[in-house]
Length: 140
Image (cartoon, rainbow, N blue to C red; front, side, top):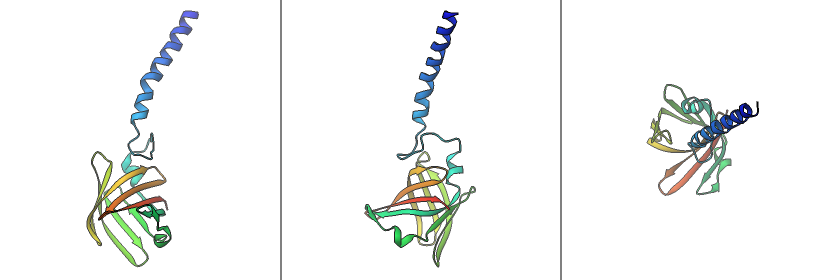
């Protein structure tokens, strides 16, 4: 009985040692998540509103509080900001670490660098010339 228990504990430890590195390698984005059962495409497909907006680490959230973005499963993208709006398409790039937006009204294309992509939070930044613009979006 003691030998069986030792083998059982040894097996559990071995399985844990094999699984832990797998879960640590699941973290794709700097701010998370570490693991998700939903695909990246399922997580980005949502209607989002601004929680925080910074340009070069200076807070400009109050200027864009009414800004929203929508991403559809088939690759559609739209943004709304008061009377301004635009639409286009989106697709993952660079091993799903970036999103390329194409065909929106105010820019031909833009690359979003994903920082965090969870079911209810989507953080990214993009470069506007030498300015780093970072958006923290939450589920609408």
